[in-house]
Every structure is written in C-alpha cells, then in structure tokens.
Length: 85
Image 1: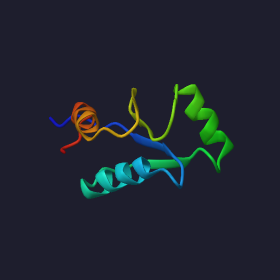
Image 2: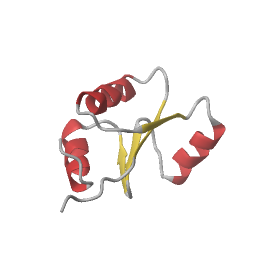
Image 3: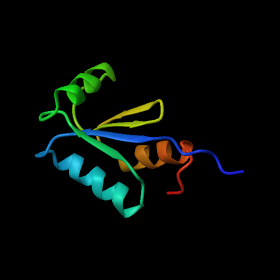
C-alpha cells in the first residue's frame, strides 16, 4: 500500500535565487507545492515566523521543516513523506 503524500509548502520571496532553484527542483520532479511570498503576504510572513523561519526558502513537508535549499536534504525529506523522487 502506498504511503499518503504530505503537503509541501514553500515560503519564498521574488528575488531569492535559492527559492527559484527549489521551485525548479520540485517542478522537474512533479512535486506539487503551495507557494507563499513572505514579502507580499502578511499572513504568509506570520506563518513563516511561527514555523521558525530564519530565511527563505522555508520548506514545510508535512511536519518537517527545512530552512534553505539543500537538494539532498530535500530529496530525503520528500522520500520520507511518500514522494517518488
């Protein structure tokens, strides 16, 4: 039986190059994600702070929190969340 996939959320900014790399990484692997711009959206910024965000990108995969873009760490977290990467 296949494990239920967790929701992936990306907190980002428009000018962040690591955010663009994370989006390209996820799109290339067909990983669905919700994106929230912490500069343009006050609620997204509040959620970012509550999640312990120290910088962007902040990636939430279910209950896992990843600060920054690290492809190997992201791949491992996605696999643990039930994604085929």
